[in-house]
Image (cartoon, rainbow over all chains, first blue to last red; front, side, top):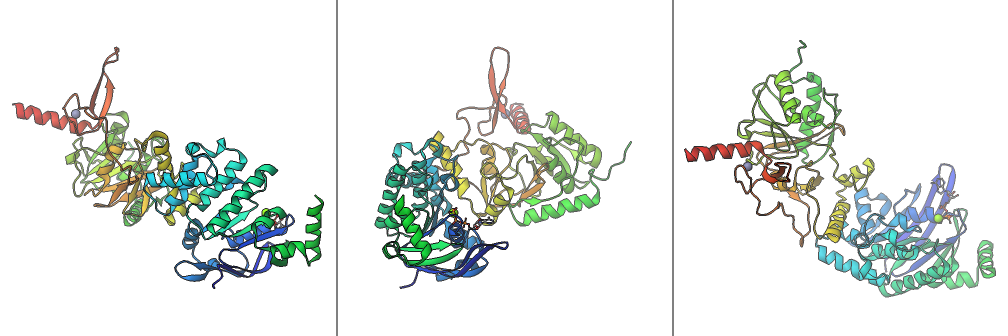
Length: 256
Length: 282
Ligand SMILES: Nc1ncnc2c1ncn2[C@@H]1O[C@H](COP(=O)(O)OP(=O)(O)OP(=O)(O)O)[C@@H](O)[C@H]1O
Ligand SMILES: [Mg+2]
Ligand SMILES: [Zn+2]
């Protein structure tokens, strides 16, 4: 089997300041990788480098493209990368305002990616938007409302619908449940788990929250000070942490 | 009395403008930056169009200037007088006799012909501006043909109004490549842009952009398969003066009692039809 994503020796500096260093991992099709670590440990830096939002200083990010097989996304031209970003990739931001068009209706938000890849039949676009609103538990009757009229949880679900409508093969998520009330988080997590299982999504999920990784991630990377300090199957890492920092992380969560 | 250089601008400036125009003609629909000059009239009075016209004029030209289709509005009259004075070119109100036509908000009804140049005054050249205010981003969108956002805007129109609710400045796709703002002409005029035998030049003074449609360029109005573009106007109306049913009509108030009528916005077209009717009657 060919890995969907293979990351080799990826480092990113902000001037002299370390963002993340020498990250290596492989993501197999259908797998969900969790990335945990304290604030400032380099999780978002890594995710943004993987998703092409930021250019790392060293390393390779090989993605198994549909047409040409594994390609280094960092060596791609900007048009190729943008095309990937709106077809095979998806990116769910922590703050739905960063991932939604706030002055465009819910239907327009979901239809956006379809139109970006050439959909030109209004009725079809609307039908698909309506279908996806249903899948993320938003009443299709609200298709013409703007995201501003929605609660934080609904906005996040709308952002997810907007990302998944084109059937991406790899989803990046940065703290998808962060900033939401606990009860809203639980519902969103449930929904995400259902979608991941049903669609067989491959994903890289960054989070502070070990409950998120327990529920969603097959494998887990623990980051500290820009370095990956531990990696393994989620249950193994959480139940039998090897690195001192992971032990601290797990025990501090148990105390909460 | 001051002696101006032919067509007011100095030769170096005209060369700079012509280079921008040539580049615009070579890449239909692409906005070429140029360094816009002060003209003896305020922005909003068509300084972009005036500069393009100045760069195109030769002494043998015959110039027509229209504003909203009319030759006799203040703006049209002052630009026509300006060029009569600084270039000593012949002027006309007859579309058929003009070699260069500068226009604001309309395309003449009478089909243009080979060799004619139509110069549009453009207030805002960037069709994506209202969707994406950042210039760096709109430039990238054009470069990468990343036009989904424009389609989203049209989707929103249909979702909200049941149709694409744009009467003016209706966006077009040029030769299947660049999306272009045709300036605030009514969408009724959009079909005239397509495959026109005339050279169409667009000048935006304040924004310092020139773009062009060389003769016989494919120009398509954006739409959806199930909501195709229609250039329609109010059905069943006809011009109260010449009886035309196929021309773009302005509504005019005729008295204090709220009397109204519809007349051709293209004054030359209307007058030409009236003259022909008088001849037929005689
Ligand atoms: N744009 C930037 N310029 C300079 N330094 C930055 C920038 N972005 C992040 N950093 C630094 O890089 C390091 C990693 O930051 P990053 O945002 O990746 O952490 P994180 O793990 O996502 O944190 P959080 O959980 O708070 O989101 C931190 O020390 C941070 O201060
Ligand atoms: Mg972060
Ligand atoms: Zn008439």
